[in-house]
Length: 236
Length: 268
Image (tube, rainbow over all chains, first blue to last red; front, side):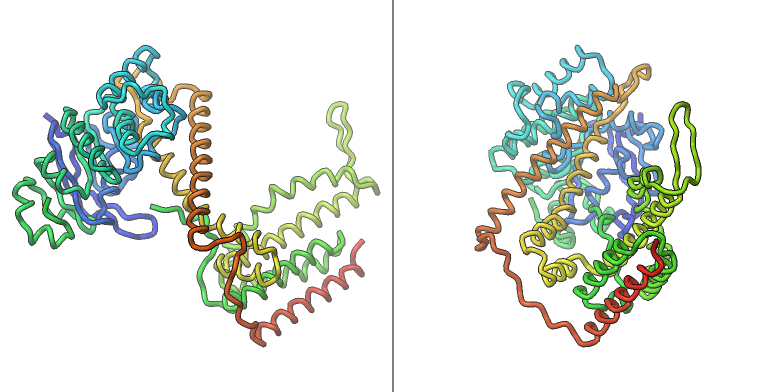
């Protein structure tokens, strides 16, 4: 049985020379829900962009047993649903329906299946009534849900979220956490929301200055106040 | 992650970098004006103009390769002057017969075209040296100093400031699209559908970007108004130009003036 995500000795530096990741190794089993925490600029978003081959560093990244390489980046992108931090970046079509349909349409699926997938994805995020709405006019919480639907419609095996609760009011945050708890997917979420980590993610990885500083059970790491403080985090 | 390649400024500490931006702007504009006014066929003057811009490029320590490579940008625009070869009356140099069409290349036409091409190439080099050796904010100050309307300068400044933001936004949109551009699990289906569909998606993205730019401009305006903006752009008074800079300015203008007057002796 392969792991959902297997990263080995991954290093990456940006073209301007800034070393964003240094020798990162991480493996995530199917069905596991893992939180990626660490201060701003720790390399969380950079790491996430490696999971579907948007960035490519030294070392190896395997997703669902497939090496992320130029040859199979298409399959990898269908298997890893990446939800960006700013939903406005993810929603670029005129209507919600078209946005959710983008992934399946791009894959070239027949129209019947595309509609079925859109319906299913919108139902999963409890937004079925929104298909004809204009993405531009939705609230932040609604946009977040639609952004998640846009990747669910590709039927991914792994859901990767960048700061899912950032900028949400308490009610939208609560309902998003409930939604994430319902989804039966392997999940990796980069976040600063430590209370959500405690609630939703049994495993936690602390990233700081491009390295994995700690990787273990959330309940254990959360009690290690010295460790949290050393990496600019707070107990959730 | 940000886009940096738009900024042509390259830091340095050469004589040209240290020159007052107002002097640089005026001299660059004067150089371009001189190029434009020099009559066609004044080859010795062109060589002298080329020598002077070459000297400036060497003094600026930007690297000749850097400037000359960027100056290639001028060539596509030069094509617009191509019809001159055929339309200027004068001695026939070459006749081209393409099926029933007959094109006549005249000698004066050719000279004019080559002159325009060469002069555009020189002018672009001056602009490149100016932009590469002067940080943009200082260039804005210089524009204000030479009495370019303040509103226009403010627009340049805002455009410069937000071009990067917009380019970053476009980059994020493109990345989000790439993240969802996958292949289905049936190898028989080709991903990407057809060109028309992809063009429609791209069109939607462009529209989206436009809407966001519009909304952002509203927000920026509100932020400006809430800090007291009333349509008038106010700035701190500029420091005086030093005597060394004055000297550079006058010497530069004098050289260009002499070259321009001489050019009418050589020009056709």
